[in-house]
Image (tube, rainbow, N blue to C red; front, top):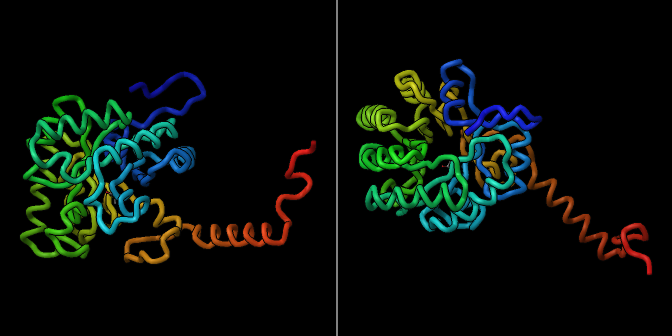
Length: 276
Ligand code: KIV
């Protein structure tokens, strides 16, 4: 992927760019997006990475978990996002059961995501059990981002969305998993909902970037779900979430005003309709 076009187009962010950012000590910003318009706004604002997360299952489709998401759903959302992006690195989640059965099936899923959706990389949840799968995908030339800590596709195994790896045994195995993912060829790892001190240790012990969500300030970068950080979901209030806007109120106000204007015959006015 070229990084400098010589035209007025911005230099594209690549997997190498984000690894170099870690080595320069420059923090990496990542947000989710699931559709063309949102992706355009996020990209033009200057984000480095857009994640087409399987959180689309929650915020776009209204499911309670990410489990129902299919590869076809994710390919659809990713292709919409890719069409809206000029600069950011677009990473797509491989959904539950599209990579867990065999490394061969995982490679076929990752290949479809790259060829049909135009993703630049894929993200997979898990450590040791998926190492051979990660190697197979990376060996085929597809960049892989790992995901450790709270891995929502395993919600029925965990039983809860609470903070992971608070006990020494789980913390040690998370550190070991991060090293295995790095050795297998991952270019970055998401650390979700783990103690900040543990995230700092992982970040110091591997040479690829860590991107945290509920994992403290020492990660090499941060990610949030766009609907959450824009204040579109009033009911979701985890400790790690900072709201940067109250879009729920802005939208509600605009819609209420529109309804009133229609009822009052104030909309459309003379300038908003066509003559004979
Ligand atoms: O699906 C998603 O949005 C994610 C992020 C929360 C990291 O995996």
